[in-house]
Length: 132
Image 1: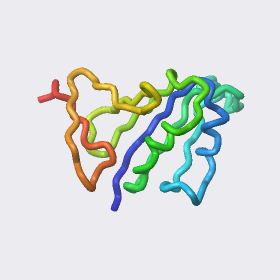
Image 2 (image 1 turned 180 degrees about the vertical axis):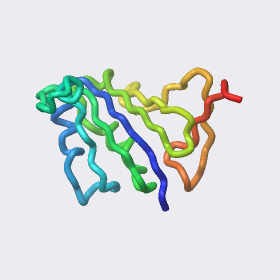
Image 3 (image 1 turned 60 degrees about the vertical axis):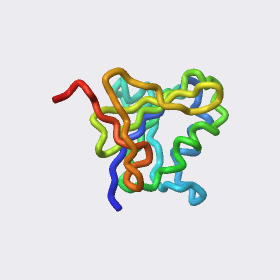
């Protein structure tokens, strides 16, 4: 089944714990790899920097069910800085997850509502309520 989703992970000082997610791993539920977005990308010089606070990935199949739990389980050096943005195919905007009390939970965004979409979405469908 084709099902597009984009995921952005923001995390301070997490270069070491996120690095394995930038390489293929047959033990993961998903086969895609995260791409680092470091200072070199912002500067436009394409020279990688040691510090990286952003990782991006696009899924083209509904095969990323374990991703949020996997990110939650990482030994982040600064868990309060971890933010995960997810936009599934039917979403009208990105949803935001943050770690609270050791758990990755969705942060309610103003003017949005999330409805379950069993079997077709990992997170359900996030819709803006301020649109006609």
